[in-house]
Length: 104
Image 1 (cartoon, rainbow, N blue to C red):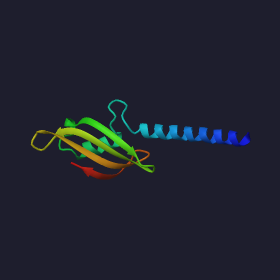
Image 2 (tube, rainbow, N blue to C red; image 1 turned 120 degrees about the vertical axis):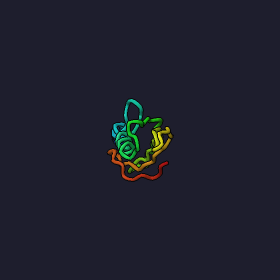
Image 3 (tube, rainbow, N blue to C red; image 1 turned 90 degrees about the horizontal axis):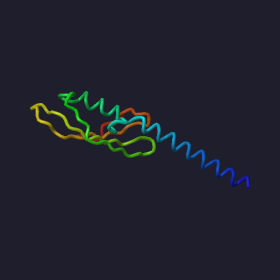
Image 4 (cartoon, rainbow, N blue to C red; image 1 turned 30 degrees about the vertical axis):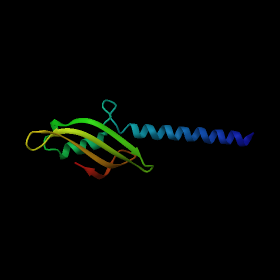
């Protein structure tokens, strides 16, 4: 009986840890549009016209020790035309952008 109690307690602790991890990850993203807060800030800083930024979509993949986050957005280029771009980045579990992997 003690064996089963131990197993149940371990499962309960694992579920609590998984829930806490998900909450930590979810706090990195805007509840309004799903954008990644720090990545959006970085994108706007690099844009020609940051005020023209329009978020389209953000998705992420949990890789254990870090996340891969891809944000698709629209903004004005140097000539004033609106173009669609994306940025894919490696992000720490606490939300810091570690590395830009790919972008257009």
